[in-house]
Length: 418
Image (cartoon, rainbow, N blue to C red; front, top):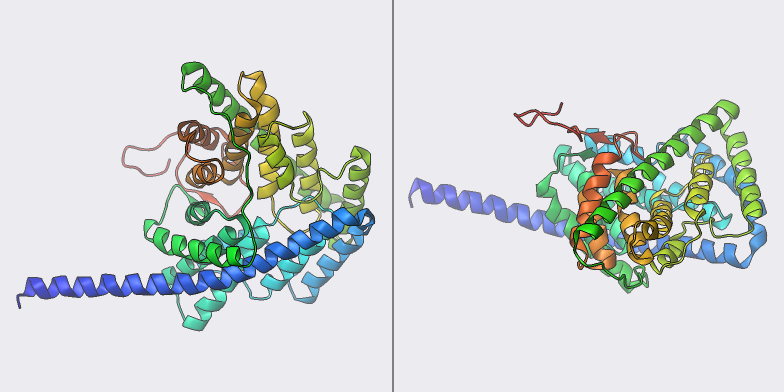
């Protein structure tokens, strides 16, 4: 056998070994994440149902907040970094402690039980990373392989909770270092996401069914209107992030003690709920996003959801901001779109994905979300909205650990960031 043939066979053996390894590991990890995601999903749904049935639970929100802070302190987590810890894991290999998994589960459950305005994706990403890190230590993986396992864990839990495996995989690839994608991680993350989605579906989780949207004719007027709406969504995403960051500064300045901060935050959220006279802004708000895509939204709904989410999350309650961002983007688009000559339901769909893109800086994941939620019929409109929102939302982000590697505005001829 010639030397060339031997070298070829050696390369084939390496590729086969890699294929087997990064098929089996993501499948197993995805199955574990799918089961954990289903339990988490049903747990949060139970909390939402209890809150809906027993309105008095709203008045326990400050007490539940105290319980969350006590749980974290008792477990030795005195400064919770949330999803930022997951992103640090992806960049530097900093481990997500296993104890974070039950803590974020309990914290999110208690937040929803008392009617806090929060989602569950932040918890899902932390649970997925925590499970993956346990597998990493068990298998003694290090470096790039350990980080790849973390990405697979994130994709698995995201997919299990939201039922969007492609979005989950691309989000895991994009979110840490925006502008640099590790393409070799796409296959393992997809396998993990599909595995988790299959298991969670068998355990009774169901993806959110969106109403059918009426697509406009592809013409100049529609393209200009979508462009204007995407610009408005980018501005709205900046407003949301500024309110979030401003609220945490106010909380920390006025209430340095975390127990006092979360208790005051619970009182403020409960009072704001009573003042609005509705429970629309409590919980994650996916139902309101679905209603907006159906063409129904109050003109001020997006602004109140921004406020309630900031008051909840920055006080120390647990959950996430992505589903609330769906609420905000969809209701904003539903109201703003008709002013630009667009159908309310269609503009709500555009608003949902464009606003999401603006706050997480993940245009490919945002486009995949649009396709998985609304189908591929309006792909050109969604791609246009995601691309523009990404550029015009600037360097604001939900995550302080997120690194935007390349300038959104310009780039040197050699491809280096400016």
